[in-house]
View (spheres, rainbow, N blue to C red):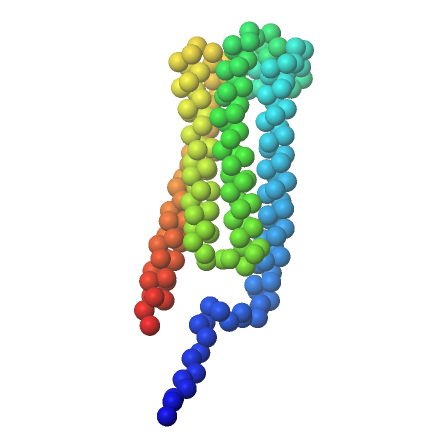
Length: 199
């Protein structure tokens, strides 16, 4: 005589109906993913435009001084980028890339995170990794002015000496916090997976 045992399907194979809160998160995340896509595109376009201007623009309307860069009229102690020798302009292109890359990658990482949320993946391992990447790029954004200052001081090409800002310190602390949150999320997910492995 045979015995038939009916087993319940695993909980994760059962598609639970979407709640109103989950729908709000999904739709809001989709909007934020589009927002960060737009900011990513805009940041990349600004970087490309800045590099082209630094390299090829010969006029007087784009200037750099000890305190800032200027579009239009600048103070008497500023100089036009077009008047700088090519090696000097190439160095500032490199500085522009180093300063802009963390911003671009930050928007890329935020876009990826909210794509996960929009797809209904809220506590997956990839969410924790995305948080850690966002924290890392925030820290890189905070440290890039100091790194560029050291590089320009060593080469003797530094003109804009106004690199130290409280916002950089705030971004660095926030980046560390976000990075640690990402690590905690990953550890929490590993603990949950270990617990699910026991029957």
